[in-house]
Image (cartoon, rainbow, N blue to C red; front, side, top):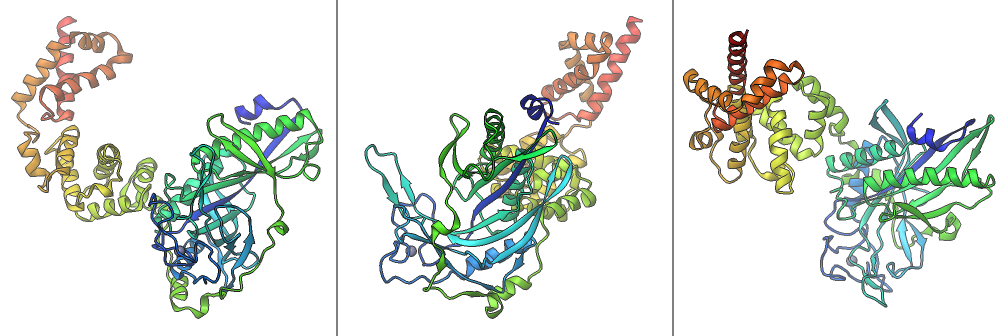
Length: 505
Ligand SMILES: [Zn+2]
């Protein structure tokens, strides 16, 4: 039982959390779902609109086939059955950011149904059922930052979204978090979505309630739907909060029960880290769904491009590729996952290996060197634009002890501003590792002379000896400006200190 559960319940009461997720994923198309308007983030408000997405009378929508193709690709990766016949329905809303007063969605004939996604977790892989995934258009944006009025930006109206609805199979905030990150990985991997949180391209709506057991009887709390979360962190925090709140509400009032209280829509207040009641939830009949008379149905079998996507073999998925990286290249699970966080980076890694990079050394450099540089420039490793061949060459130099691992960092940074090979740059920077024993001995002696305290620690405190040896090795690297071979420096330090010990004895 988790600490959270122990601290919350009274003796004789146990509970479990039941979570389902609705996730909106923006599809990576150039244009909107039913018109030719471009999709660009942060464009001038209302500049990317036309009569169709403005909902002007008489304007007719035309389906964007690319959006359907991408939806099929993700649906297949989610192990869904792709419907041979899917149709479009109008879902009625009345909001200023939806000028048509309805949203085009898919109601009873969604494109993808009945699949699953395997999610890695602490207790191994958990399988989460996917009930359905359907296409729909996004609404515009209401902007409330001008006092006394609300502005409406309709650039976003008509953006293609795939709404993925899971079965209520998730049992913890952590698992929901893992599901969302795995789904993002999958969608970006397959180039189905850019998956950017900052641009609002993935939005999450968890449905949460509890099954509480007291004296052998199970009670269920009403379901709350937490609307429009736009980060993984918010998903976790909101579910944790909702779990606590529902348990407390039930303990305070035992009639707080499923069937006796309405389901709730709640919003997440990120500043206060609480959910807040918005309104009781609509039922499907409130939306007055009906088939859109302006659009023909989607018949995958009758469309060559869609049929082609359906028949295409699924790419190697991140979970399988992660296992292969461990088996084929001998990488640790952590290193493999870090490299696989972005597909282009994983592809670059494999190309570097093909170009002759020793995989383990290259992996360490991806994790410790290239990712740090990428972070500094706020890019991914692939976006740094270094060719696989040069990345491979640097890894080879470390493997062959031509440069030390620490000097390789300096060389890597220099590679960003140059098209020269790492061997040339290392030479220029004076970082080619010195194998000259005499010179190494000088550096080691200088480090020992300047750090008597560390030497004493090695001699007198076995617990801290290792750390002090590491410190001295670091000093040798510093004195030598990274030219010393750290392995041999370490050996020589141990030898010298042992010599000192013999003298003392
Ligand atoms: Zn338009």
